[in-house]
Length: 299
View 1 (tube, rainbow, N blue to C red):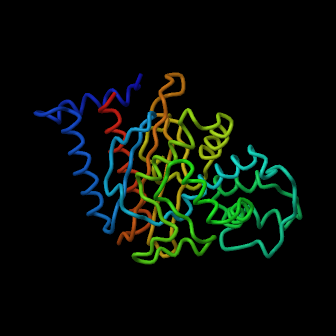
View 2 (tube, rainbow, N blue to C red):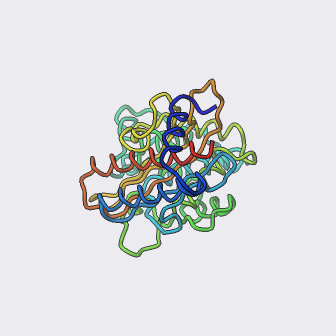
């Protein structure tokens, strides 16, 4: 079932597409709409929509490289969960934090240092996903073996594009033409499918990562803002200092929970727009609406 919202989308589309097959016609329409949004905000806009079976439904600049910024933290958390399951790491072992662990934007780590509480890598991974805490992400990244091990992990999931080269906050540099710390929308969309949806992924790990992404507190103005409020969504944002990158990746259940619709994955990357943060956020939300309409067209 697709729900009333999806049904209305499909009805409206049927009136629009006219000649040609509905899927082909709407695919072209979606590309035109995304290109128009890109033109309004400037820069490059990369989009990939992947369905529950791993099929690519929509791509705009899908194979171009974009700076990941904090969107890498979802896969980082998955890498930690996998390492713990293999017995390489005990993610529940407690330790104390130090002021030397701090980097820019570390709300959870700062609060824990202030009160002197113990923590664990499990708690740090959750903080990295839910609040985008940079210090927490660095602690997890060091524990799994640094950027090379992160890259090896995504390679093991079939991703030959995504690469991580530095720690927070240097990885957000987003220098023009620099391939370091980048992904493509298609690569990230398929990676998130492999980690969050695919049958081959560990069920407990999937549930944990899905829960953390649902609890994310940073993405309310981006993909989530473009979707019906009743739809369950989990996401991970990423933003470069100076406004050179605005990103969001999401797992979306495009119906109410009781309708048991399988989730889809949407990855949106925006590079070097010339509009304000609020305008770019609104553009990302608009792209999400277009992308979900593309999904509804196939259902």
